[in-house]
Structure formats: structure tokens, C-alpha cells
Image (cartoon, rainbow, N blue to C red; front, top):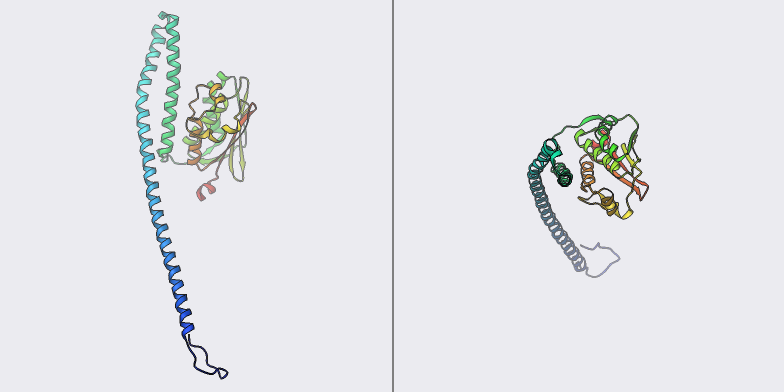
Length: 293
């Protein structure tokens, strides 16, 4: 603040300009500090409020999910009773029933089976979202062995649809939750069978790549229109073409696939062309990638 003296200067010296500049600098720094501190406090308060709101939303979503599970579970008993009575009618009194009554009972049986399937899928999706399957420890699974088991279970559906299912690719293993992975395979392959045309072919390919283990399920069925691809993983979504081709679909299969993909840290991609078929690619992370994630 004190100006340097020199033999070249004469007359009295003053420190007033330096003092003013210093005071102004301090004032500006104080204002900047005050504004920065106020903004930081506001941001921290907003983050705290958002965290609280997110926690309340998560709790509300969990409560809704639990209520849905309880309600849906309560519906299982009535449908089990209906199907049990139909079973009795078929084995004890079927021949004595008029054809008109038999036709009515068959419709009841078909609709009861559809609703039972929907209830089962709702319960599965609810359990996956609630994390009740997280206690199942991961295991090293031979993918082709698991796929062959799934295809064997779906043999009846494939025969009914007149569709051939073929498995090819590498004999590789992945460390995953076997229960969830089996449900994912079941839904993708059953979807491919259901939306294939009679005499069609579903190809399941397992590949080992640097990014992870790839599972590709390809059908040559009705395909998906471009505008219908983005929402296909939403709950209960069915395009008009899909609902017309397969009226028994619940619209929950791909929602289950998406949830399992999130649980297993897997990525899922879809490629489709109307009238030519659809291909789903699932990339399961390697154990190193899964641990890093």
C-alpha cells in the first residue's frame, strides 16, 4: 500500500489510492465468497430435499409393489379352485355333458389359464423388482446346458406352433443367478416361438466376445414395427400386430426380461423388421466386469 520512494519523485506521497483499491478488492472477494456460500448452501439444501423426495418415492413404489403382490397372490386361490373343478368335470362327468356345456367349460378353462398365466407373471415381476430373489447366490452356469433345459420345457409350445428351435455357438459359462437367467431365457425363447409363423425356425446362438457373453435369440416371424420397438419392454404393452397374432400374450414377458437384465447388469438390444422377424441380443458381463460395475 505504501508507494516506493525514489530520488526522482518529489513532493508528498499519499496512500489513499492503494487503500481504496485494497478495500474494493476485499469487498469484491467478500461478495463473491458470500454468493458462492449462499449458492452452495442452496444446492446442498436442494440435494437434501431431492434425496428425501426420492426416498419417499422409492418407499411408495415399494409399498405399491408389495400391495400388488398381496392382491395378486390372493387371486391365485380362486383360479386354482376353478381349474380344479374343471378337472373334475373333465374326468368324471365330461361324457354326460351336452356339447354346448362342454364348449362353455372349454372357454372358461382357456380364460382361466390365461389369467393364471398373467397372475404368475405379475408375481414374478413383483418379486424381481422387490429384490426378493437377491438372496440366491451366483453360480457358474454352462449357458448351452441351461438353454437346452429351457428348450426342452418349451417343446410342447414349439410343437403346438409348428416351430423348430435350434441352439448353436460357443460352449461357454457365465457367473449369474441361475433362477433369473432361466426366466430370461424362457421369456425370450417362448416369445420367439409364439410370434413365429407355422413351420418357422427359432435360432438361439451363444457367443463369447470381449464385451461379455452374448445370447442371441432370432425368429423369422411377424417382426416389430419401428414405432413399436421403444415401448416393448413396458408393462402390459402389446402392439396391435402382436395382440392380433397372439391374443394370449399378457404383455409382461419383455418387462420381466428388462428387469432381469437390470438385476444382472446385462444389456439387451433389439433388431426387427416387419414381416421378416426379430432378434434379441443379451450381453452378460464377465465376472470382472460385473465386479467392476
